[in-house]
Structure formats: C-alpha cells, structure tokens
Image (cartoon, rainbow over all chains, first blue to last red; front, top):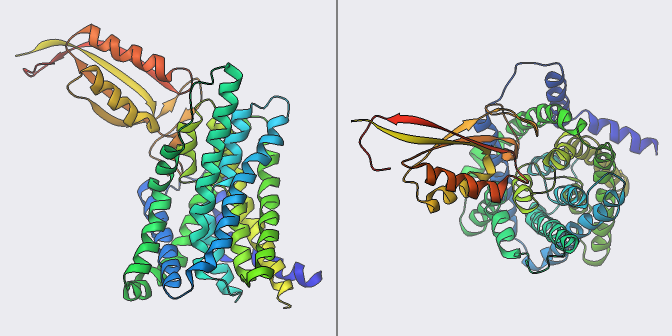
Amino acid sequence: MSDFLKLFLEQLQSPTLGFLIGGIVVAALGSQLAIPDSIYKFISFFLLMKIGLTGGIAIRNSNPTEIFLPALAAVGLGIVIVFIARYTIGKLPGITVPDAVATGGLFGAVSGSTLAAVLPQLDSAKIPYEAWTAALYPFMDIPALVTAIVVASVYLSKKTGNTSEKVEIWPIIKESVQSSAVTSLLLGVALGILTKPEPVYESFFNPLFRGFLAILMIIMGMEAAQRMNELRKVAQWFAIYAFIAPILHGFLAFGVGLIIHKLTGFSIGGAVVLAVIAASSSDISGPPTLRAGIPSANPSAYIGASTAIGTPVAIAICIPLFIGIAEVLLGR
Amino acid sequence: MSQQVWKLVIVGEEILSKKLIKLIKAAGATGYTVNAAGGEGSRNVRSTGEPSVSHTLSNVKIEVLTGTRELADKITNDIAAKFYADYSIITYIYQVEALRDHKF
C-alpha cells in the first residue's frame, strides 16, 4: 500500500499535471493570459494526428485481430456509461432526464487531451502497452454519443406522446466521424497504416508532442476554471457526478481490461489506456453533437460538469491512480 | 443609386450557423454576412475571442438584407418556429439604405 501511495505521489508531480494545475490557478486568479483559439485547435489536431500515426504504424506491424475484443469492450462501455447516468443522476429530484443523459453521453465520449496525457506517462513509467490502443477512441466515443441522443429522444417522444418521429442514427455517426477530433485521429491512423510516415514522425511529430501537450494542459486548466461559473448555475448534483463518474467508469473499464488481459494477453498498460479513455469526458467533439442532438438539454450542465471537473479529475486523479495500480500489478 | 431595404439581424449559437444559412437561402434571400459575436443574454454569458475548448458556447451574428418586409418576416417566423424554444437566439430588424443598385 505504501508503495502504491509513493507511486501515486510521483505521478502527481508529472509535468502534465503541473501544467494543468498552473492553468487552473492563473485563470482562477483572473490573469489576462490568453492562448488564441486557433493555437488550441492546431495543438488538438497535432496531438491526435501524432497519436493516430503511432497507432497506425503499430497496426501495420501487428495482428489486426488483437484489437477486436478491446474495441468491443470500448463500444459496450460507451453505451453502459450513458445508462449509468440515466438511472443515477437522471432519477434525482430537480434534474431532467435530457440533462442527465446528455451529461452521461459526454462522460462516455472520449477526451483527446486526456488520451494524449496518459500515453507519455505510460512511456515515462516504462509500462508497455499496445500502441493501437489509442485507436479505441472512436469505438467508445461514437456509441456513447449515439446512445445518449437516442435515449433522450425516446424519452422525450414518450413524454409528449409523439412517437411518430424516429431518431436517425446514421447522421449522428456521420457527424461524430466528421468532427475535428475523430477526423484528425483517423487520418493519422490511415496515414500510419497506408504510408511510411516515419521520417516526419521521428523528426517532427514525436519530438514536439510533449511540449504541445504541456501547452494544451494549461489551456484545459484555464478552461476548467472558466467553466466553473457555468457549473455553479446548475444543480450541484452535476458537480458530484462529475467527480465520481470518471473514477467509477475508469475502474469499470480497468476491470474489463484485466479480463481481456487474462483471456487474450492484452497488456496491463493497454487496460490502463482503456480505463483512462472511459474515465475521460469529451471536450472537443462531443458538446456540439449533443447540443444539436438533444437541444432541450442545458449545455451549462454537461459542458460545465465535463470541462470544469470531469477532465481535471480524469487527468489529475485517474491517470496516476491507474498507472499506480498497474505498477503494483506488474510487481514493481 | 440607393434604395430602401430591410436589414434583419440574427444573433445566435454558432452551432446553428449552417442551419440558419440554409434556412435564409431557402426563404429566398440573395445574400448574408456572418460575424463572430459575444455578449450576454438571458440564458448565459456567451463569449468570443477567448480560447474556447468547445465552440458550443460561441455566438455568431448573421445579417441579411431583404428587399421586402415580408421576406424578413418569413425568415424570422421560420427561425422562431425551429429554434426559439431550445437555443440562445434573438432577431431584430431595421430599415437601411443600400448604397448599391442590386436586386434584393
């Protein structure tokens, strides 16, 4: 246990986390520091592109059937997370079902920044993982968003007695795949598989990755502090959910990952990636899809919960927590 | 050289901009102008220019010049029916002088 605490504390001192907390502190102190939107967009693109390339190169050199079970698990987790929200916060007084389901959808969906944060920390801790695990992102992201929109639409049409309107699933999938985050990642995967990007990968994408990640962490921290004001306007249950949900979803996914580890030899590092993907909540691609798909849900509730609390908890608590557990399981 | 036309201004959520433009063109307007916008309304403070992780919280201002009041009213009614209930959006109108001969 003391080993675990020591490892956990070491993880807390990682640059990723330090920059995130730095961003929160300067924004909370009312600093005028502003990082332009276009830089944020470029960095998100760059990081997901690099992760996609890494995954694509790995898939090219590996057995593609290995990804099947983890991908299936990712789909299942994305769907289950929405139903957890539907039957926990969705049942609480003063919370509408569309708000609860939209929040569940966002927490089931995946954060590119959290994914970008866990991979270098696994590298630093020297925990091996399959590089293609990053490609699990869309397998959890899209089912979660689709499930949330379908559940909310079914609920609303039952409530109004208007059952004639059917929910079209295909446009939601299309919109998710076309979102900037998933497109960047899938483009990277495709280029990694089909071309030989090693020269640009080694000289450009790989060396700059950690630096850009650190800047993104500052932006995420500043954003978290700003969104706290939005979150204050909605029921405090959302704040409590946003704190517990990433840890709960992470443990659920880590357990599933360990079962796949026993069955097929999926690495423990891979189970950590699956857990962190499940713990993360979408901050790039999810909100616009949900805003369009569930218009009656209050964006202050789900964006506030995800950006102000969910993402910091996923990065600051879940990443060190699951890396710490993995180190113990690996007998270090 | 100049003519009296109506200027309809729509301030709303950025994620609606594609749908609004489609609606404006379908109603028969010949053109429009889009700007990024920020400010505060009854639903929430909505800002622009700051780094924003999610564009769900950004706003746009769309201006449409129409030759007749009827066309402007039609656009307003379409927007009201589709978006007023669930979205932050407002429309207003005033008469302006267009300084170029153009068939609106």
